[in-house]
Length: 237
Image (cartoon, rainbow, N blue to C red; front, top):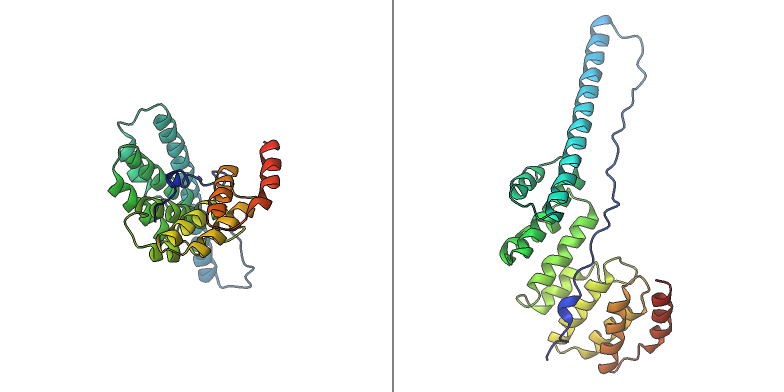
């Protein structure tokens, strides 16, 4: 069965850049009447921890500034040194810096039509348990979008199952790709229901919801009840 011609438009919901890294917190445990040697060792350990903590903060601040500078250069199309600088930031202990650098590398690869590198990088992001879940989920969405025509529909459905649920911030893209995968399997009923669910979720962007209403209708599922809500959403913008 042919897929809707505009299915390639669905995969561009970007991660919220307002994520903030957790702040380091240190605390001292009250200790009693230690002998002099034990007290000195304790204080030395605390001093070492404070030094290391401050070093990490200073390093993280420097990396954040460098990432900002890299993004500025990307915006200005000054890309000569960007790959090397992003590669260094890939090793950051700051998960936000690391994840943002990896996403930037994948985006640059796509801009150069280097799909294999982009797929590899998005796959790496999606499987890195040290990154915030939002970054991993975005990696999953993007790599699935790029691989959609090359992998079995059941793999698409299984991969996106945690994200293709009403209320998920990724439901628009994940739900639409899941519905299209159902269509590849010839499962019109399941596809129609998924499109209707996408149409009914007000968190999903209006363009995806409008398309979902139309496609659901062609599959025999009436999602027109979502149209008034869509009009309200458009008027509120």
